[in-house]
Length: 339
Picture 1 (tube, rainbow, N blue to C red):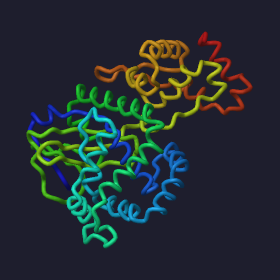
Picture 2 (cartoon, rainbow, N blue to C red; picture 1 turned 120 degrees about the horizontal axis):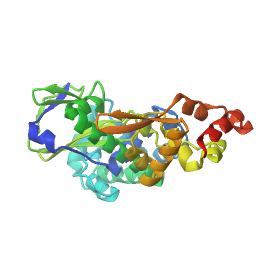
Picture 3 (cartoon, rainbow, N blue to C red; picture 1 turned 180 degrees about the horizontal axis):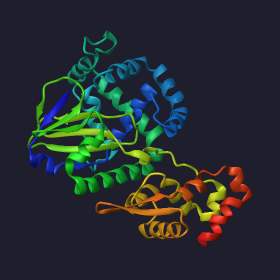
Picture 4 (cartoon, rainbow, N blue to C red; picture 1 turned 180 degrees about the vertical axis):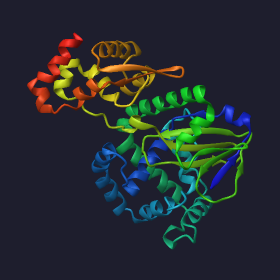
């Protein structure tokens, strides 16, 4: 296993950041391996995979670069510069583009665990990688970036709250179960690869969520910054907006129905605000009405207050469209709620 040695001060100063480039690279990995984790990712692949494959078919050099750079056991380091937080995508991808050609080739040899194919012994590899990442960003990520960003920010809020409740160990063990965990004695396991430990005490340590559920990697600017990228948690991972059924929207109002749909897993008002884009006051009013109707219940978890659907709320959400369309089961809930 691979692990980092760090002192208590380094862990205490660590932070979570959101990175457009990390999200874009995670999407590139999903396009490459086509290993969807849930229906939202399958739908996303159906929408974008044909154009991605056509682009690589027209550019065999870049296709070979992707296959080499996203190696089976290791990713070429120059494709994943350590995020710094607060950077725009253009600033992040500029660091990929500025990689020295010799360094890019060396990183590819490491990813391949062998010699570089003759077709990749060239100086334009960083430029090609940057151009492909720019395409993935513009075509597949940027149109939904505001939604994705809210989901990622909600995950950061949840993880930060978890740190305050249970300490860093509880968070680290949950980032990538089985891969990332606190080993004790100032050691952080970061993956299952066998390579020498790194001493990172005094450097910046950051954690970076992405929405792609089977994504995850580590990155570093040696001696300066180390990053662990992990999939964001639970229901927050589905970046596709589940459409509000028309009957449910007519009954509760579209915004309130969206809150009810999201509460299949417990969430705080802060998380709901981040994911839906609604104001904190509006979310609070929706939760009050849903609680009074018996569709949502409130629970306390440490210092946090979480909301989740009740069995009655589950029945209303999952009721066949035909039954809701006829109005009988849904109408009784509506009568009791006063909505």
